[in-house]
Image 1 (cartoon, rainbow, N blue to C red):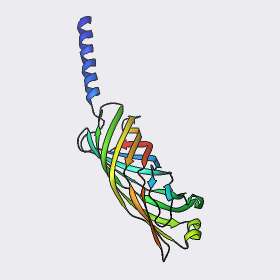
Image 2 (cartoon, rainbow, N blue to C red):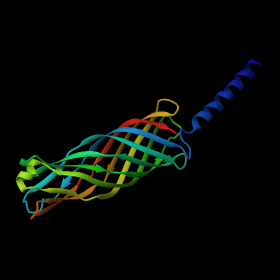
Image 3 (cartoon, helix red, strand yellow):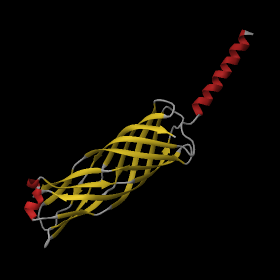
Length: 220
């Protein structure tokens, strides 16, 4: 009898292990909502500001809150949308480096990615995604430094469409709660126009930022 009991207990333990090891954290129709602190780090490169030989511009980093929503199509395939806005200083470089900060602008970069979750049943759940980004620039403002150099100047940046790549991981901390680490690379290109009344200058800028986020999330 003791031997039969041991065999029965071992069978139950094995069955339980199989059940819990294959149970998925998220199933089709589930939502994940995350709040992240996001560091936006431009990998920028610019052309020459038209009419100003040797001039270039650079874009500074920013840290901002971000909200994202993930919907599971299947246990492993999901779509994610992010919402947030960042503010960036634009600096003169090359022959106009002495001007320092020449403008500032805000971005609204909604991004949609299609994700594959590699281990939905595990405590540590890595994923990868690819998608598309649209960036709207707004609240562009010239600084006193630029206005003094060129005269009163209006600054505008064209909108951008580009591909986005993503790697991340969710780490379970409670039944429906988890912490998240996420990295995205976005192809972001814009043309900045400096309108000083009688003279209009343009410069093409490749911003191409890395989005590095850490936060918490919950399954619904």
